[in-house]
Length: 258
Image 1: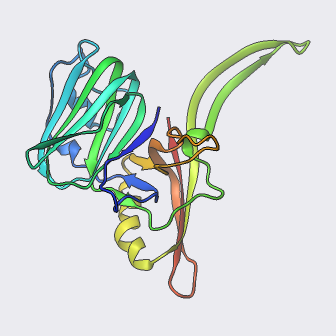
Image 2 (image 1 turned 90 degrees about the vertical axis):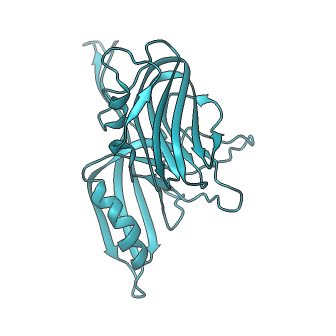
Image 3 (image 1 turned 120 degrees about the vertical axis):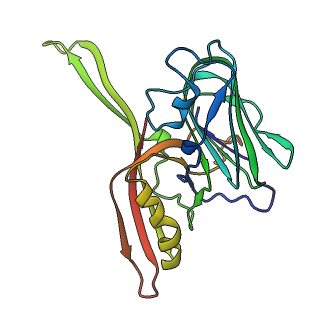
């Protein structure tokens, strides 16, 4: 399950897409109550998803101390279980509440400075492949019509088997990914220069957390939390153009995720 938990105070929440790419976690020191062989706490600070932190049992606590203004925490879990994220600010511990520890999770908040980030897992079979935190980037405009939420945009590379008589012989799946295109229009030139272009530069070397919409109401009144969030990377080269004579710009880029 991929989801975004929005802990921002009322009046500051928006439904614009959010990108978590600034990352101070990679330069800090992580500790844990326990770690399975080959899965130390430090492995969750890298961008390699084949490694990460795994407790030596099905429960454990992962912790990073810092002193900085951050407003997002991104996590990518391989496996499943239950997790809670806590961050300490001003002597108070704020909790995300329990959520399913599977796939990408993004937590947004706006109370600073943060001195501790803590991840608590239970009944967990798998590992924390990545944790990032810093200041998120919010898109200047919403996107909706024509956009495919990334967790619905499946790409399956498979070999399909059929006999000479047309009988089904099964599939061999070689790779499964998800990918979509992000297109935003009517961007001010100042926004592009100071906010979006630094993300494009960083994306040449690292992944990012992508949160499309925090609230997607369904016909039955429920909120779909599976189309929102991914630990993604930009593929190819972003396209940027001067779109209007008044100086407004347009940008588009492709992202992919596991």
